[in-house]
Image 1 (cartoon, rainbow, N blue to C red):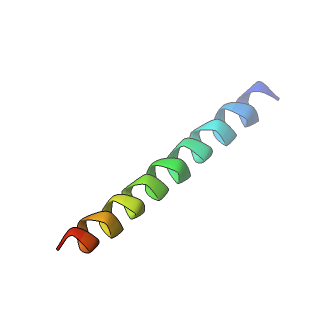
Image 2 (cartoon, rainbow, N blue to C red):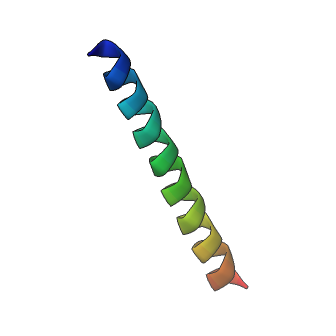
Length: 32
């Protein structure tokens, strides 16, 4: 159970980081 929870939290963090990077790309594109 704890192992799957660890995996889930890791995936969630990865998705969250990707979302932040996408937002940053859009912001940089808007600045240009």
